[in-house]
Image (cartoon, rainbow, N blue to C red; front, side, top):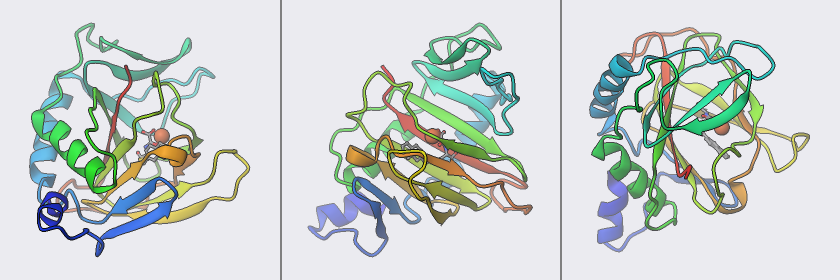
Amino acid sequence: MTGDLFAALGAPDAGRAEPLREGAVVLRGFALDDAPALLAAVARIAAASPFRHLETPGGRRMSVAMTNCGAVGWVSDRRGYRYQPQDPLTGQPWPAMPPLFGNLARRAAAAAGYADFQTDVCLINRYAPGARLTLHQDRDEKGYADPIVSVSLGLPAVFLFGGLKRTDRTRRIRLEHGDVTVWGGPARLAFHGVAPLAEGEHPATGPCRINLTFRRAL
Ligand code: MD3
Ligand code: FE
């Protein structure tokens, strides 16, 4: 929203852009205006490729429910983690990425200093109370030159981020409805996770949190 406007006015969007670490920034409320359209698109995507709890290679069921849109989607099963062009649940291609998604991801990346970000996959995570994501790196993409853009919708979450080693100390920040974070450069391979979601109700999503992550996988 404001990123392009402030850029057009020649002023930085400094009031709401908080640096997290080198290469990473949180843009508070950047997706607020788009939230209703984003959530409507998520409902359409989930009608075609439903949210599901994937199995880890180790045989555990993930507490976060996931789906995807775009040219490929991220999946996990006993054989490992990968991106693939078909939804294994339906045998069909993943739903197309809505133009709004690509536009928002490009505007957010630009506001964080990454020009011309092109995304080919959006991984959509749904958290019910108690769901969490343990500390991990995102390294199933072909390259790490492009940033990852994330959009938080619905219930707030405590997001954990560390350094390039699993044992580096972690910081925590609260991510709320409409917040966007961008992770590039030296932050691209930082360890990160999400603490168990607290109970609650959000006017936009009810009793859950939705997170969109825009990546370039291919
Ligand atoms: C930092 N999702 O889907 S988004 C994931 O809130 C994931 O659902 C979390 O981690 C969520 O893989 C966090 C913020 C995020 C996403 C990707 C990153 C932070 C990142 C990649 C590298 C470093
Ligand atoms: Fe991740």
